[in-house]
Image (cartoon, rainbow, N blue to C red; front, side, top):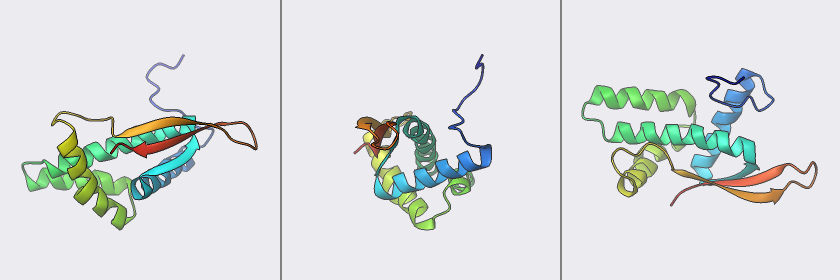
Length: 130
């Protein structure tokens, strides 16, 4: 049984899986669209939605200490300063304007994109919602 199991292991050990999710989320935030397998795309979508929610909460925080706490959460996962800066300055503002105040997800879209030629794995395009 899979009671209280939140994520898929993706056939990787824990450290490798987290590094892969961080790298894919960084690429998604930088390029706003990446191609990967459907299973990985779903996990990256969950991970990226959480990062964007934290950035929005940092942008809308009433106290500087609260904003700093959310920024530190994001910097724990996104190591590239340019991508993190863009997340706080552009993407958080873009999604704050578009979505309501209480929205905490739905910033990414996963579109099925056929099958990979080598092994037949189902591919998907994951992109940020405009």
